[in-house]
Length: 72
Image 1: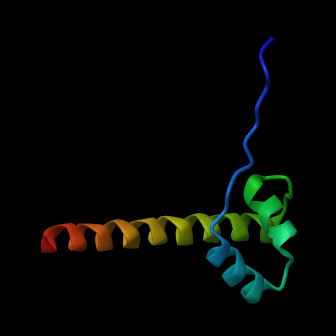
Image 2: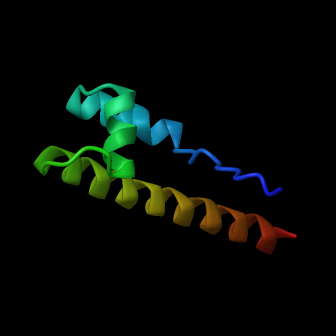
């Protein structure tokens, strides 16, 4: 008997706070927009901006990790 295990996606909380302050929508609405449960112009903008900020944060972390690795 196989168990169907679904994992909840985790979102960058710092980016969620930034988007909440910028647009004034709730964290729930923003998460649903990113996930695709909400449709519309604003939801598309929120999703695109989240993805852009998330990619930039990952790049910044990788760059900093490379700098620390090179110092050794």
